[in-house]
Amino acid sequence: MYTQSFDTQTNAKVERANSDSREDAFLARIRRDEKIEPQDWMPDAYKKTLVRQISQHAHSEVVGMLPEGGWITRAPSLKRKEILLAKVQDEGGHGLYLYSAAETLGVTRDELVDALHSGKAKYSSIFNYETKTWADIGIIGWLVDGAAIMNQVPLCRCSYGPYARAMIRICKEESFHQRQGFDIVHALCKGAAAQKAMAQESLNRWWWPTLMMFGPHDSDSTHSGQAAEYGIKRLSNDELRQKFVDVTVAQAEFLGLTIPDPALVWNAERGHYDFGSIDWDEFWKVVNGEGPCNESRMQDRVSAFENGRWVREAASAHATKRAERALAAVAAKAPVTTHDPVAA
Ligand code: FAQ
Image (tube, rainbow, N blue to C red; front, side, top):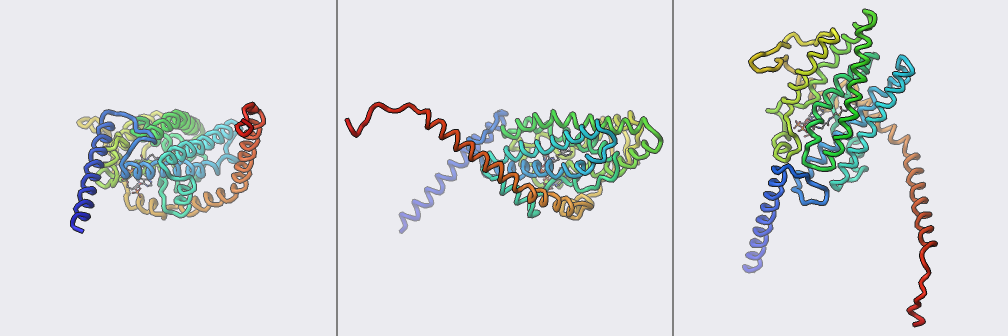
């Protein structure tokens, strides 16, 4: 009895030592800036935080199709309609790359989608605001895609290979999106006084929610420390938010729009803009399901998923049939063996 318990304790110690040395080797790889690939050993905490972040990101892209999707039929010209249609379709594609990246970590698409539909998984707070006017479509492209790029460019260097590679393509597409948004706002600002006023009114509504996209202050961010150690987050929430404010002020000036923040002022000593405080109560309300559109966004996602069930089933039945036919064709062409082991 004594020997067995001694053995068990020794085995546990050896396992812990092995696991510690594997973790040390893993962290050393991260520090050398090596990419971690799906087949490599990784700590559970690394896998868990990646599944959380990548799937939240995927959900954000897919839910993010809704605020703009509702404006495709209302876009003011055929050209704008075509562009918006392509942009919304791109966001769906981003969701697919990201779900695929998350699946390399051993979760299934069904599990991820269930987590979204049951309200367990988060998605970006920004998509719970209403798109009331055509100017909102321009402001989303300019600011929301602009904030997304600011946050996502450093993710192209994240330590997990499949996520980093997905982000390269996504960032290229997001940069077109940002420019198309800026172009819409620019056209409105050059237009009639009422059009410029529409752009300003939209900026007034979207500015603060856009700053919230970067997440809580670093001091309140649960995951930042570990995500930085694991080479997932290269810049902190506050650093990215500051970079975004710094580049956006000059763009607003160019457009002749006023950023709705009386505290916004250049701080020569810091070499950055100072800006006012974010309403974190509003942020957490929206994150926790009480934003203006949380309920309708989820209803729309779930009903789109249910309405599309027959298409997914038909596509997968078709794929199975094709695979079976291809296998049968290969079997039919297989060379007939002349050696008959039974007769021999
Ligand atoms: N909304 O500890 P942290 C786009 C949650 S894509 C909702 O700082 P983390 C493209 C956070 O999940 C936009 N929840 O978290 C597009 C955590 O909760 P948990 C999405 C938020 O992960 C454009 C808790 O608060 N982009 O826009 C938000 O280190 C136009 C504590 O926060 C990405 O997902 C928020 N804003 O940092 C599409 C980029 N912020 O999980 C269509 C990748 C924080 O413990 C149209 N993600 N929370 O329950 C990231 O970089 C990070 O996950 C952050 C949050 C920065 C979003």
